[in-house]
Image 1 (cartoon, rainbow, N blue to C red):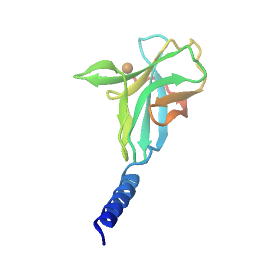
Image 2 (image 1 turned 30 degrees about the vertical axis):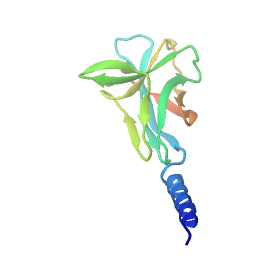
Image 3 (image 1 turned 135 degrees about the horizontal axis):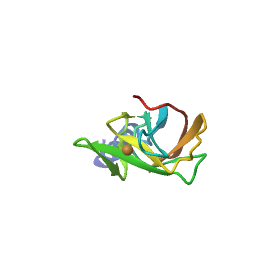
Image 4 (image 1 turned 120 degrees about the vertical axis):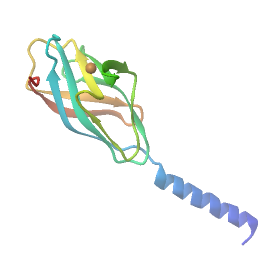
Length: 142
Ligand SMILES: [Cu+2]
């Protein structure tokens, strides 16, 4: 095999390897719940599993509620027991991120007084765009 052929083969193999290892993210949303905050009016926290079955990583960059576009959605985390707002949440390739109480979660401000039984959460990802999931309001845990 000539040196030129060897480099052509190496390039082909490298390209195939990169395609198999990378590729786009594949985002799925499961098990979503939304819980009105106790003591904080018109506010609720949302929790869910964000599953990335794809070969590429993604970033959660925002959240809204389809039925209430005026509601402000934020991404929250806990640092040393204190709640903080974060600009984005990394969703690595092949990983599931669990948004749960006391950990990463979504928070919504300015909800109407009367809430429907179900709403649609709209999550925005840097790579995958908007993904929607239906969720029910759950009374706060006492
Ligand atoms: Cu919060």
